[in-house]
Image (tube, rainbow, N blue to C red):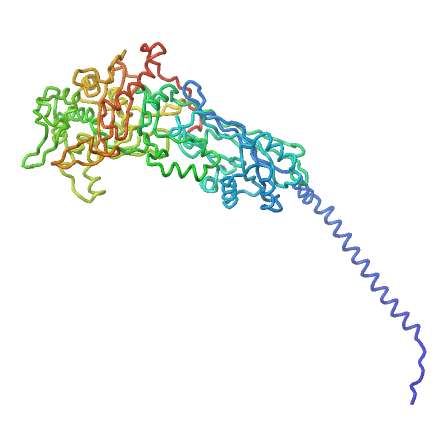
Length: 629
């Protein structure tokens, strides 16, 4: 059966079409309103926010590091300066392909393996975002030109001109000045937030020596500038600038002439020299040999150079003057003598007979004198002049370790001197309490006898010996060794008062006879001297010699020989310099260390014509507020 034919319903279709058109129009109008509303919200409500974001895309705030303060000696001679250096740097956030960029740079300039290794090490360490990472410095003019011409092919790469620390005298002042090198994350973590903000843009930080101790003074205050940049980060113009405040220059008490005399006098030998003006504590020379080249550390020392220093048996990175602990030997005898005089244990007229050894009652052990056949009858003056061990064995035994310890500590032995350098060694001034705590054993009479001639447990630094000599030369007036010329550091202890003030002059006269007397152990120093000086020589054992053994220099290796020491001051009537000299394995204090001290004193006390011309004490400017570290 066939279905009936139906006609098309135009009316129904018209209604469906009108409905769909209405819905589409509504949707178009609604979406248009949403778009217009969004545009209005962005352009009106959020206008300030997006204007700021837009400005940040083209306006940047950059830190401007301050120039580091210069360091000079007391006469204005430059010891640490800043010199311009052109370096290629990378801003990692702007580099699309790091490895490809490094390859392109390597085609334009020479990149050593150490350059790439340092760069990757800095890249891996924590850093501030957008901080440039140096790749290689000391670019030549031709290399700068190549990089500049190809800069459009190297996004994120720039050639920057920086001020780099330079030490024109190299090893001469290496241990006292120290050095700066790259600021790292550990340095920043140790700072407060305020200090961190002051190091924005700064690449270098004082690491050792004067550079470290006076870091805050030398660094200065960071500046800022707002710059407009293009899409590639290139600066178009400077919008606003707050200039940095340069670091303060630092004048030291060191004297170039005296420092060089001390350095040259040591020659190729290992040792240290410290010279102090006893009138105010100014350090005139501070030398430790061998030294190191500080300029190698500024931009990061290579593995090869550092390995060379680390593997050197002479240990050139070790500051012997500040941290070297050595038995002071006979250089302590004037101080032990003063302790005995002040305690009433002895006097200048008391004599003993020296057969060449000292022996305790009911004890078979013999404590030998350096002179095997002895000195005969000895009083205090002869004991100092000829360095009679037996006299001081007896004096030390009668004095006791407690009184020895208390008296010597007043001369800065066994404790830091307070010099304006970090990591100073305190040496060691033993006591009964110290031995029981450190060794777990009681104190014996033999320990006291050894300590009385500066052996056994007693250890001192060359700096401590120079400070003690300055105090003795100034008759008990305390001084604190100081390197900054505009600071007069107060002494940590009151002046030393003896029961009889005449003992100062008598001891100084005995030390004068050590140099100028016919039997003095340092009489080699007196040759052609236009002034009179006082001294005390000393030797310290590197290893112990058995009771029945004989010390034979000819049979020993060089590094097993005795250390040579000497303390001295001059002129005797009005001392203006006190010197301590250490020569490792130098055998004899008088003949080895004596000439070194003489050259140092000549450099300070004599003019160009070789005539005595004692310089006046340093005129110190008022200390700047906040200058202390």
